[in-house]
Image (tube, rainbow, N blue to C red):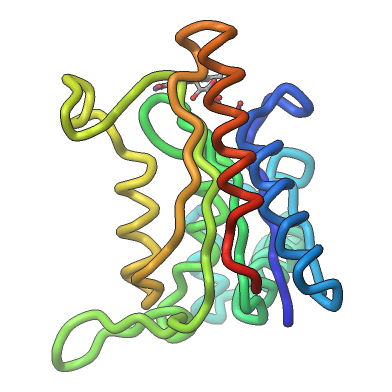
Length: 202
Ligand SMILES: Cc1cc2nc3c(=O)[nH]c(=O)nc-3n(C[C@H](O)[C@H](O)[C@H](O)COP(=O)(O)O)c2cc1C
């Protein structure tokens, strides 16, 4: 069974989402030691923003030589995702949504004919059957009862994206209120790490 582990926080060892995504992977690895784990750090090896040349190359047009390594990364990223049975993602909230590094990754995995297709009844997801677990960290609170609910474009966005490609039941572990103060940060992190240890085994 293959597990793909993705991190996208720019805060290195200070990152909350990295600690929680690592705890999720540890929990699953302990339960299933035979897991085949691939790790991709989107800040250490960032993907370029999509360009017209990327899209033209996907249609078979000759690509500029300097795009070669990034096009190869595109293929690797998509194949990693397609091969994974489980995908664990560290996703911090930056400016109300995902980091741009994670968006660049999503731009490489939402590929017509690979993870979705348009048919007579509209779009159809092709990537169903994977288990996706997302470790979310947010500076504030965005619950439905809060005045900030309408600004939540992290979890809502990821639910939509994965639903679009057929993964309708992504799991989320959240550490919220990280910027409220040190006590709150500690409590939120401890709660998320605890939730990771209680996850259903792979
Ligand atoms: C560039 C940047 C933008 C941020 N934007 C938001 C935001 O819009 N809303 C929020 O609640 N917290 C925001 N935060 C706080 C982070 O969500 C919070 O610190 C979280 O722990 C980040 O996850 P990480 O520690 O894994 O990087 C921001 C932090 C940074 C560094």
